[in-house]
Length: 219
Image 1 (spheres, one colour):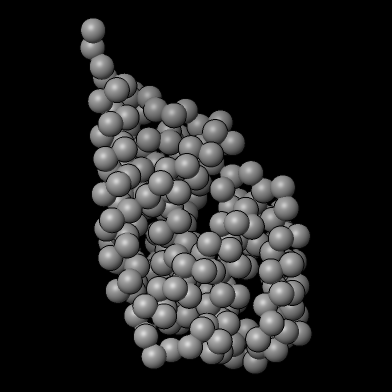
Image 2 (tube, helix red, strand yellow; image 1 turned 90 degrees about the vertical axis):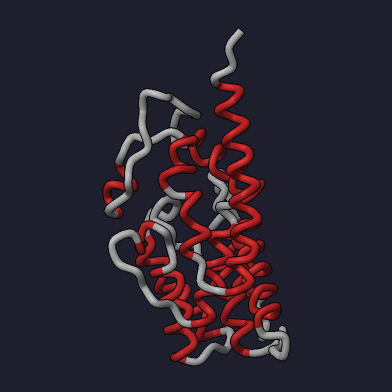
């Protein structure tokens, strides 16, 4: 299946994005999700229907993200038409749409959504993008764009209990590691992702330990 139109759509929708949710993020999610699927299912083929579903979900997942999209409902209608145009069946369109509308961390704070297998790989790849070296870079990019402090020892991390609280509470970028990022590895769905998640989380924990040691350095 030709994904060129989906790639072009994603590039257009995310043009100018500056918070770490840009086209290259979508491209990495699509590629990583497919790589992990083929790792877990070595007899699968990269040109199969499920491989195309995985890649489509990876590319499109942030085009309707409420953080960067002013009208997600309108864009979602465009996506449905596009998916049908490039050859996805009604059921495949439903799977992709369900995935991209239910995979986000914020959507799953109060209720855990069970995604189709294809969606689990997209969700895992998206979460892995929040870990490791990429995760560190994206966290500080997003925090800086939204005016968050790097760190303030007077602002303590909180337990996230709802979508609205997650979006509205006062946070620092370092607190974001404790409130969300360090928990992501435990939320991963697939064998390949769980293995990679542990490695990336360990790298990120080392970074935060070094950051706090330098912050608290005494003469």
